[in-house]
Each structure stands twice: as structure tokens, then as C-alpha cells.
Length: 302
Image: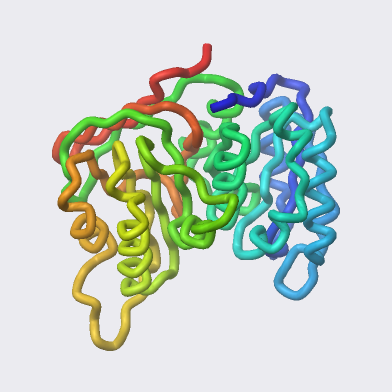
């Protein structure tokens, strides 16, 4: 996998909205990025709206394309997620980006970009806080984002409150939002999961839907070929009047019981305030010892 150039003080970064419109200003996020020594430019979509989107599909695609093609812009932050990136992904020309890569940052709906870039261009991206979520983000989550962008080492060790499956595995870490990864199935944007550590997070879904998507992944052979499974926040899960009878974590563990790779829960990433940065496309080592979990990048590219 290709590592984009890391940021340095004085570099220019851009903020654009490839999905939903912003409900509030992002002044706090701009101030944080400027405090890191970065120059911030805002796309037209930051102030645009068209129905629920940050402008028309054409505007959002053009806004992203502008920053993708501008070699003075060293990183692109998606201002927020929501829904809409899949509507523009096929209108974006990544050819120049493939030759001169830069960091793409975001989570949730931005999983579309992560998956497409990894599948077609094998370029690393960052799953982390976005300008809309920065004001509520924990200090440590924001610090991991800064470290990821400026090539400072960071690893994770934490204790899970949910029973994990012990073991050790190494491989490229990838993934994102479960629903969005499912949307990529059968398309040019679907990546090869074999031999990788898969990270999953979700928000606001029904438990039966989680079950359905995990089974779909299993039937496609995705779950069998993994080296590890990292489960982040599965927040605000919904249930029917007749309960499904299992938590999201129990559903997942049940469907991977015949495999022997490590599985951990409670990873601090997803639709949570402590949404720590993950460099997708980077080799990592996952160790799970009962409740103790460590995820360490095997190569910091120093």
C-alpha cells in the first residue's frame, strides 16, 4: 500500500462535504487545524445545501475534484458523513490522485472513499474525526488524528468490557462502517479482504439488519479469510417489538465462531466521542488476551 506524504507545518489542507450538508459552522475544527500549523481552505460545499445534501451531486463531485487535483492541498477532510458519497464516487477522476496521493480523512459515509481508494489505488487513508465531530471529540482522539497526519507513532492498548476471542494476527487493517462496506459489494469499489484485519463500526441499525449483513459477509467468504476482526462502536442499536435476542457483539461472535483469528470488541473508534484515528491500508499486529487488547502498527514509515 502507498503512503501519502505526511503533513508539515505550513501545509494547506481542504475541507469539503461529499455527503450531507453541515448543520452548524465548523469554526472550532478550523481553529484546531490552524493550531497544528496548517492552512485551511474551505470548499463551496461547506456552505451549500440541496435537499439533505451539501449541494447538488455535481457541486459535491466538483468540489472534491478541485481539491483532489490541487497539488498545493496536502490532505482532504470530509466535513461530515451522513449519506451521499456513493452518489458521486463514479463522477470523481482519481487518476491524478493515483500519481500524487494525499491523505483523505473521515469516517461513516466516507467509508465509500476508503473502500474505493483501497480497492483501485492501494493508497492509505485515515479513518478518524471529521470537522463536524471535532468539537465533541476526546482530546486523545484528536491527538491520534494529528499524529497520524504528521507521522508520529501511535498504538492502542485498552481493556474491553465485552468478552473477546484471544489470539494474535497481523495484516493490513481496513474497513469502516458495516452498512457502507455492504454497499460496495459487487462493485469496482469492493476491496479484497483476504489476509487483512477488518475493522467494523455501526450506528442506528436494527439488530436483525446487523445479523443479515454479517451473514452476507460470511456467505461471500469475507469472514473466513481474515487475520483479525476489530469491532468498534455499535451505537444506538435498535430492536423490534419482538426482541432479536442477541446484542450486536453476540451476533458477530456467533457468526465467526468457526474461525481461529482474534476478535476484539469495544475498540475506541466509530460513532463515539472517543473516535481514535486508524490508518487504513497500514500493516498492523492485533493481540487479544482476554480483556486486554493491543493494536500496533508494525511499520510507522520512519
